[in-house]
Length: 427
Image (cartoon, rainbow, N blue to C red; front, side):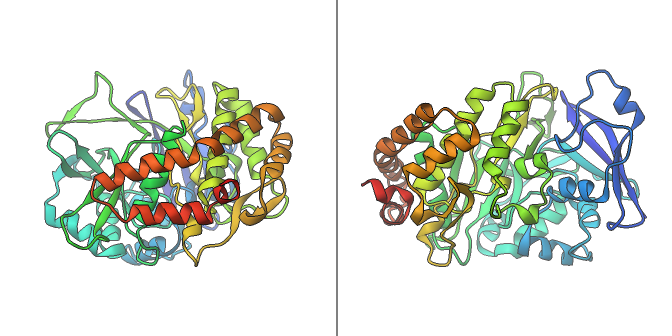
């Protein structure tokens, strides 16, 4: 029997919004509680789950809540760790749902309530996370009851910048950073992502603060990628736990969840028009729709120029205000030049002007796409031309920054991006 409570943090307070009830994951359905529906100022937890008295369908329930879970190999490892069927997303979520992306929490009525605290991580534990791949991250994930989406090994930790110490969040303690491991198959991917993120920042794209964590080994692969969570925010009235300030949780949902699209369909198929539909979401729900549409447009241009063919709709999100009353496009994240790896696809995750293969996309394709998504052609192409004109200086500056930190090999990655990314057509 499935009987899970769904909570959301609103202005620092945990609020029960509904339940997921069913015999098992095959027939479980989410519904809002009467109390939440009658609460003044209540808001939907997803644009795909509007406020209503009726329970949502099995499919609508699964599309949103399964979107909170890790994907691929990591999900299989977690399922094995918790003795669950890989397809049983609710059994897995019952274990991991204590700390999700955004402000949602999934509470299992039958589970023991863990003690809320922050535990100092020793240097050896950080080093093990970098060296032992999925095994170590899965153990931390299940211990912390923390669910982070994506296919790579990642955990949520608390970072205290003054002492440069890392802490493990237990119970209801929020994390402040997402820490991602270097990918075994894709060499130098941590440096690749940081190079792309800094380049994007230099071009005016909003990104979360990120940095490379070197565990002190001579092996250049024994590094981690830490990203400050934009869905966690400190305020003047933040509580203190174990001598550490506790951030508020801000709600977020990715565009797959907002559009009611399953995580398994995050890559656009012919004619699905994901970018147009995402722009329509911003046009209808963003508190600043014009600004956010142009921000999303800039991200798409950058993905093309940098050669990021993994630009799927789970790598784009909406960020809610603390009281859930306003919605904005979240900062850009998970930007990697996939084209530098021979094993990666040349097809973009979202088409541009009806074209998927990055080698066939050009300025004309972006012109067609601008008209398709409802942007003014002149403004859209002005953004395109500005991004192209500034790309080389931006990546040079980002590369210099990382090389000065001791990552000399980023110059090789930079050259590969210039040779294999979309920018090569304009050099």
